[in-house]
Length: 104
Image (cartoon, rainbow, N blue to C red; front, top):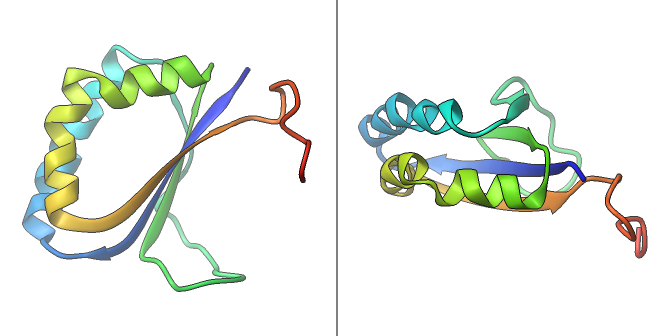
């Protein structure tokens, strides 16, 4: 029942806002079980447009990932990320979810 949140930072628009985001976002981890799988390390684009960075967070379930994203702690940080970057955030079920391999 694992779920992943994939954060893709396409470009930075306000570095100071991203610093505020980085200061506040970890507070959401205190109440929500997550494991960083990848966290803005070196990456290689195999297809598509270049991006600045990628983070992948693992959660025990889709519900747990949504609870983290919608938590007051993360929402307090989110406005700074939106101000500081053009990003995409994707919630995806892990392969241990039923029927996730259909259409692969």
